[in-house]
Image 1 (cartoon, rainbow, N blue to C red):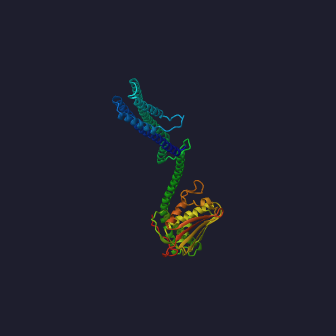
Image 2 (cartoon, one colour):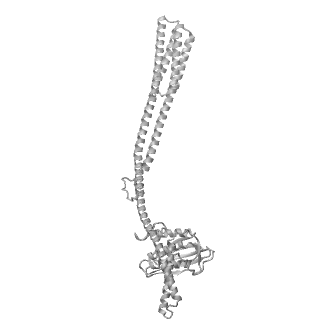
Image 3 (cartoon, rainbow, N blue to C red):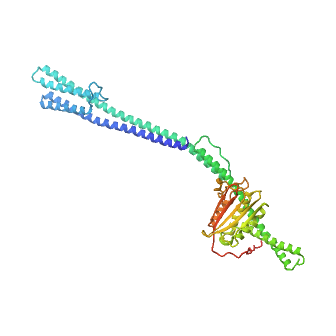
Length: 488
């Protein structure tokens, strides 16, 4: 049995034992009550017999008819008491236990009454010897009555004492039995519970010190084994998440390093840009088309490098969450520029975002959303040729911007589709993903007051649909130059 069943069994046994003890004690108390009532009746009967003897002595001394009648009156009263005690049994049937003495006393009372009547009949008309003989017989009957009544009193008293002694022994034995059973069940159940608690305490201390070692399963099939299984799953998950957090820490450190490098690159890029502008303004290469083309290429590449550095700085900088109107097309274009170097040569990103669509958002956070979705889509496509499509449209009825990021990868199985936004859930091979990207995306979109859901059919790619509230604020000027970063 497991611990729960043992506890239930111990409770059932305890209640059954208490019920049995209570019923036996109640039966003993009922018997004591009946014995006490019978003893009271027997005591009255004994007193009446003593009255019979008292009037008998007076009658034998003074020969007064009044004493004779009083004696017979108490005899009849005693017989009535016995009739109330002794049940009427059919002829020839053995009397019930305890009734034989009362039946014998009844017969003695009847014989005593006959002897008293015989004495009364012989008084004054028979020789004195016959009268003395009748008196002797009456006295003998009287002594027998007293002896029998005393014996009945002693029997009743001994019966009561016997019942009380049995009750005391029964209470003592039952109490000891319940105590030993309680100690036994407490030892068996408590030992397993304490063992499980010690195991949990030891494991938590071990985990707190950073040791993620699985615990050997104990024998048996009770809850302790289930607890150990749960602890082992927890230890495995904690070990996995610690490794993932370490990896995220490395990425965060890399972001800090990238930010420093981007700041350092600003100075040479600014110098190159300034030098290129001076050469163009001095008409260097005016008569040489090739030189002019090279200067234009240098100028455009410097601007492109500056945008990439600006995007890296925005991505690595920790800013407060601020909602500002932004052109969605410009944001998508910056993100495409940042991930273009990480995409395989045969994977393209198609943009179908209206130039005039403006959405209130935090550019840095939403940039992180698109970067995660682009990189996930590229990893889903893998080494095969494919296309990532970013499209957006207005839902005027819901006052929302509907953004779709689709890929031509293998898609997501239906049983996994509802878990893609769970933290640490990933379908990638071990070491190729932490399962945090889409969870971060979900949190950012939710913070913008929007929603995101995944759609997929196996073999036909996957699509992530983002819905963001449309704002009424004016958009920034089209193709506005990004703000210059301060030189490091």
